[in-house]
Length: 401
Image 1 (cartoon, helix red, strand yellow):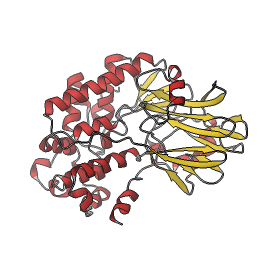
Image 2: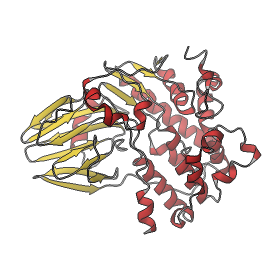
Image 3: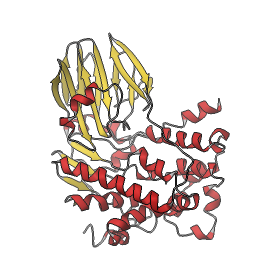
Image 4: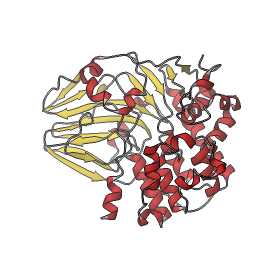
């Protein structure tokens, strides 16, 4: 029962993703419709259709290390996800449908007897460690392995910093090299958007948005009530013209600073964030005001399961599963959301920090700041003193405007 309770906590956030519905009927609240055999693939804008080996392929998004159009056939033919990025590929033949995604699927999938979708919650869901497909009108789920190489071994701060720096450098440089769309970013004054910005500007011109920007399209207007109920639609920019919206999401979580998962990490290492907040040394740390919010304090005072508290590998595995199913930014219409921090390799490296250094990252974003400093130390001056404080954008003067 204790393990089942833990699993129920995995689905903690559902936000932004590209939208589709697979059914036998055309759905008028979607703006695009692709028909093949007895199926209709209903989608928002921005999806591309093609044919490979007599199958209809409907896809959207990007791969990290290659133009997705050049590796589409290998994605279609792969039995399990192996490519990182942020994409969905729906493969349709006469008697079967497969949903292919990047390795760390960033959107939920729901289904019932008549539909598979990610717009409305249905009675069944598909975890990110599961595949779903239709064969002869039967919906089939299949488990596959994502999380591996977890270790209790510790690396030095400098080694972890070098590995993180190289990972982000290589990933972002590669993406920029094959991207042809304009790049735009909204800087919030927070660590994560500034961290991503510090890498992006080394390889490409990135436009800093000088205000909140959200254009309507047909799909949004038809589904605005559903979309507004998802919290992140108050925190994203949307452009009708094809655009890459660069985002620091989900940096809090993957950089070991999300309240729930950071609390688990501290617990397995014998600490409690609620107690740490009372110590003088953390009186003006970056997360002080945010962690002091009642909603977060409740997390810190909740008892932590012995399964998590007494076994580091179990704890790290559970944190990774939580992140995999914490769906935040994905694509809307012709706006593709670029989220390079959504990568389990990042948090797996942070697990290997000496605990006292990891604690500095949790409380004050220490590692994030060190990475920004490697790229452009001046950008540290434009980060807010506290996360999500009332004037968290004040330090952007001189950069955003």
